[in-house]
Length: 427
Image 1 (cartoon, one colour):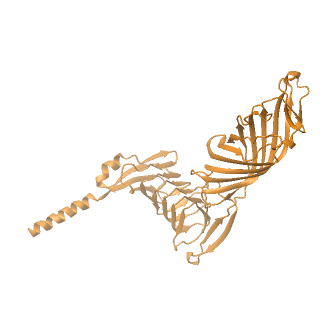
Image 2 (cartoon, rainbow, N blue to C red):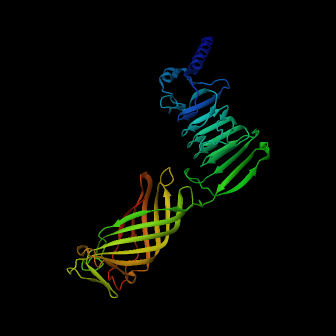
Image 3 (cartoon, rainbow, N blue to C red):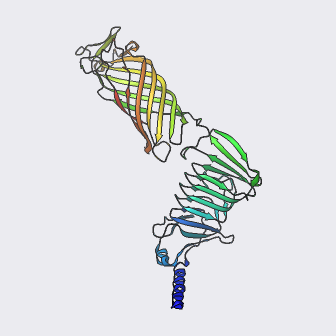
C-alpha cells in the first residue's frame, strides 16, 4: 500500500509538471521594424540577434493556454511600426518574445508594461527624436546593453522605471524623468548619461535649469548628471480673452447709467511660476477694455450724465473705459496635459481713460463726437474670475465667469452700486 501511495504521488507530480510546461506559439514577421509600440498586460522580452534582419515573435505560455494563445490577436504591423496589442485574454504577465536585430528609431512602452531587452542599438544618425524611448506611467524597461548612437532622448513618466546594466557608445543619453526613476548598475563601461528631473507634467518642460553634477567614481568614468528645474519657466506669453455682461445696470431704469450690455476685452502679458507638479501661478501686466451700450440718449457735463430721450436729432450713446493693471491667477491641473486646469484669478487695475461716444445715425453722422468721462469713473478696479481651461475646444482655450468687486463709477455720479457679472472666452 505504501508503494502504491508513492507511485500515485510521483504520477500526480509528473502530471503537474507536464501541466505547467511552457510552450511557444510563434508568429513570423518577415521584415525589419523601426518602431515597436508595446501595450499593457505583457511581460515582453526583446531578444537581440545580430544576424536577423527580420523578426520572429512568440507567446511563451503554459501549455494549458495553447489554444487561447493561438487565438489571441497579438500584434499589428503598419509599415515599419509593430504594435504589440494589449493582453485581454491570457494571464497578466504572459511572456512575449520578439527576436531580431534590435536597432530601433523609436520605442514606446505602454502603461504598466514590463519589458526586458538583452541589447538595444539606437539609430539616431544626426538628431534623435524627443522620445527615442518613451516609458509610460507605471511601465518598466530593463536593458542589459544599451548602445547609444546620436544622443537618444528617453522619457520616463510617473512611477516608470528605466534600468541599464551596460552602456556603450561615445554619445550622451538624455533621460527626462517626469516622476519616473533611472537605475543603473556599477558595470556601466563608457558613455555619459544626463538625467533631468522635472517636477511637472510632461509637455513644454522648463528651459531654465539649475545644474548640479554628481560624479560617481564607481561607475568607471560614467558621469551621471541630475538637473533640478527652476520654478520659473522663463517664458513670457500673450493672452486674449473676450466677454460680455448682459443687462448689468441700476435697478432704476431712469438712471443714466442703465445699459444694454458691456463688451469686455483683456490682453494679458504674463509669465508662469510652478508651485508644485499640479499647481502654478501666473502673473504679469494686463490691458482691459470695456465697451458699454447705453440705454438712454445722454449728454455729459461736469455734473455727470443727463438723459435727453426723445430729443432730436436722434442720437446713440456708448461709453468706453480702459484699465492697466496686474493679473494674478492660481490654477490647478485637472488633466494629463499642461493647460487643462481650473483657475481663480484677480486683476488689480487703474483707469487709463473713459469716454462717452455720441453718434447721430439719421444725420449722416454729422455732429458725431466723444467727450472725456474720466471724472465719472472709479479710478480703481478689482476683478475676480474663475475659469475652466482646456485645449480641447479648438480656438477657445477656456471659459470664464467674472465680476468687478468695486463700483465702476464714483458714488457722486452713480448713486447705486450695481453688480456686474460677465461670461467670457479665452482665445
